[in-house]
Image 1 (spheres, rainbow, N blue to C red):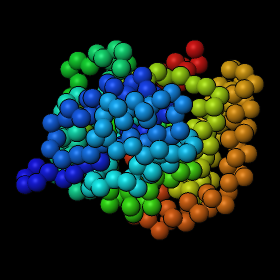
Image 2: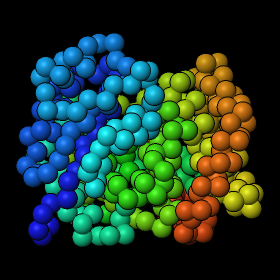
Image 3: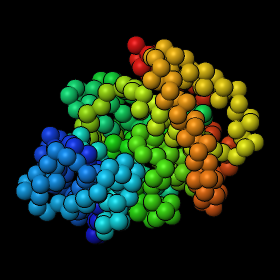
Amino acid sequence: MQGKSPKVSVIVVNFNGKSYLEACLRSIVSQGYPDFEVILVDNNSSDGSVGYVRQRFPDVLIVENAKNLGYAAGINSGIGRASGVYFAVLNHDTEVRKDWLAPMVRFLEANPNAAAVTPKSLLYRQRERVGVMGLNVHVTGLGFVRALNRRDVGLSTAPFSVAAVSGSSFLVRREVVEKMGGLDEHNFMYYDDVDMSWLIRLMGYELYCVPVSVVYHEYTLKMSSQKLFWLEYGRWSALLSYLKPTTLILLLPMLALTEALVMGFCLRHGLSFLRAKIRASVAVLRHSGKIAGRRRKAQRLRKLSDWQLLKRLETGYQLNQVLHILR
């Protein structure tokens, strides 16, 4: 970067994550980057997180929400107080290397058509193994983590294009978020990163992973019935918001196969998962008006056709991750 470094607002969304905050915030404030602010968004924690941060990190700006707004809405409440030209978003259960921020900023400064980047994420408790290096997205909306559990040895450090950034850590341009009207609060949690990435891609921008930027994240590939609900609700909301009806009709065979896989998973794991899948379908119908509004916004922002978007996505399933969850 030449001249003055652009200001970055680092936004950490927290809900009852006090035990992680010392390592997380200490690693952020130790960054070598010359111009950034740190904003902690607390989603009504009951574990004393806010008082702890006020005492230990008095320079951190705290946004206290009166209830748990979820991840996307939490980020938006932080954005409302942010003054940076870039927003760097982090989960509370992360720790970053000292050079985490600067490489991502340099990349975006050098590549104006890239809207957002995500770092290489290593597992918090197995730091020699990869948690995620961006996401792969199937044409039916399923999201898969890239390079899960690979040893962090001999991997390329060159930036590469990804279908979606990881919500645990990403850097995004303020101007792009403002064009989007903020992150879509339709997604309470889990699918927010894929949803945001779909819309950014539809707007004609690129997404990348910058592997020289490293974050450690407390991540385990597992599924609960509540997580399944939010993933399925987010997936179908995105499909109905971003793809045209004719495209969905042409995708029917693949959509049917994905539905069969999801239903098979639910039947294998019990009634709570089956109920979650049904509740997600009912919620999509109940919020059809909101989804129609999302669709109108997406059409206003659209720069790519459906097929230009879909050709960047996957047609195959990452069966290793499917089988891991099925165990």
